[in-house]
Amino acid sequence: MPMISPHTREQIRAASDIVEIIGGYLPLRRAGANFVALCPFHREKTPSFHVSPSRQAYHCFGCHKGGDVFRFLQDYENLSFVDAAKRLAERAGIRLEFDDAPGQREERAIQDQLRELHEQITQRWQQALQTDAGGQIARDYLAQRQVPAEAVQVFRLGYAPDAWDDTVNWARGKGWSARLVEQAGLIIPRDPNDPSRGHYDRFRGRLMFPICDEQGRVIGFSGRVLQGDEKTAKYVNSPETPIFTKSRVLYGLDKTKRAILDAGAAIICEGQLDLIACFMAGVQNAVAPQGTALTGDHLRILRRYAQEVLLCFDSDSAGQKAAARVLDELLASGLSVRVITVPAPHDPDSYIREHGPESFRQLAASARDFFEFYLDFLGRQNDLGTDRGRLAVLDAMAVALAKCGNDVMTDRYAQRTAMALAAGGRVALSPDAVRAEFRKRAARGARSQAPQRTRTPPPEEIALFDEGTDAPAYPTEPPTPQEFWLLKLLFLNDEFAGWLALHLDPLWIRHAGVRALVESALQHHQAGTWISPAALLGDLSSDVLRSLASEAMSDNRPIPNPEQQLSDLTLRLRNTWIDQQMAQVTAQAAQPELPDPERTTLLLRLQELRQTKRSPLSARLQPDASPNCRGDFR
Image (cartoon, rainbow, N blue to C red; front, top):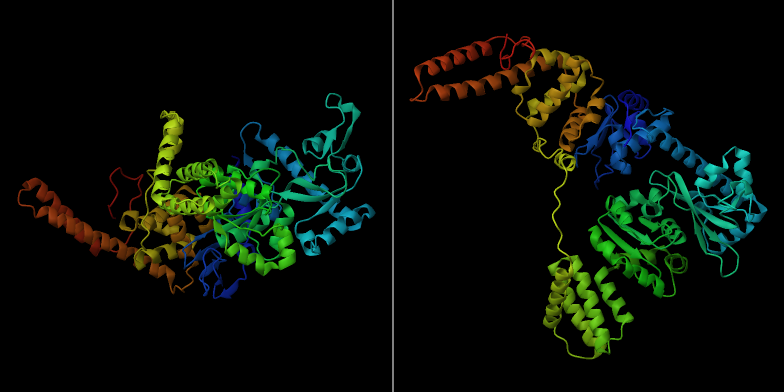
């Protein structure tokens, strides 16, 4: 993974005002020194989401999410840090600098060129759809399918002219090398063994659907035929390229991921027009697999955004079989699964056009549990009037429920399977008998699996796995008011950290989270690497610490005479710590079996502590001044 240099990271942070960035997503309203809004990370009626322009930080006092401008994009857009940094760098016009492994720079340069090429050809095809005479066939098709002009713009639909060399000539005119355009999958060599014979266009006379990655960058295309014989493929998709892997791309996710996050569920459609129809009807938590069956990679991507998927495949036999085929992948994903049944002969697009968006939303709301759908599907696929058909259903349900591994679900569908088989075969069938058959088939399946030998991972894998397992678990309970106030003062003025480095011993702080934040800030100041509170916030890997720090930065209660408050607060923390030490020493000295020399040492320590408490606060010894200076006061 590329690493962004610290210098570049701070350049991006300085050029990205957090109020302006968050204001592009949320309607911010000024409230004193901060800005407030309804939190985008949990449902609320009263604004508790605060953005601090002076600290360049945000914090929600309801759900306690907080961070800097990078973290906001990571949480809101579900991006990695690198992708969030890229997004902010592009916005600010900053060239990213990476600490690269050998070969990564060249690979990234090719990927950047391919993305730029895809963006330019997208614009070319958009223009052809809007103005070219040859594009009338595509405009007529969209009108017939009742695709609104707004959808054409939002999804950037286009038209690839019906010519063998339109893209070839366009790319040559733009200065793109034929080799790169071929690598993008836009043109095909006439003779793979003889490049000198030239190329021809992959997409000709088709309605073009740009395929985007999760950041909204065009990485491939799907082209629908508009006229041709029956042998012509209805859809032609981009081949896999350095920026496009079909099994890892979901059509529309760049536009629908926020709605999926909000709903906690994703509707999976079969095609692009189904997805567009759902989106424009206001059902925006939808995606479509791209040119391939629904894969485990697709579901792992969706799991980052949702806890449930709703399959919405066509009502014909092929669509129902497609829904049934994804059983194994769905069960392995851990996602909850339901199935939207669109009445025949409709698909989602035609159903919405005929019955309206509200009717489709009702279909989605009444989606059935997957195993209920699967049982019905098996009943239609097999003759329940025969022993062979009933056994086929019994076997299939037993296998599916065994993979599910849920005893409650198995018991429920043992009853439903018994009812379905009894009704279909007009025979009496006991749920207990079905349960027994389920258990036998599950046991038979378990025995048929080869035993798995436990593999001892190599040391490097153990290190990666164990990394962070021994990290301190910071307390989630809030610190005392005094210690929280110390954090507020620490982040109020950069000079205060320098003063605290001389006068505060972190041991005086009881709350482990506050102590960790203070120690980190003081270490940066002593090493000369302190940049800003927002930079400290961006370096925190612990959600607990990030929430605590962002809350202190976002708390806009006024602090009168902060210099005096800092001194008084530090003195109180010191004296509280001294009181605790004195209590411990007194208890130790009171032990009757304690030898006299040790008792004398403890009494001298007690006297020293009392004298220190009566003394004003002064600079403490630094750790490098003496090997035993912790807890000493001068």
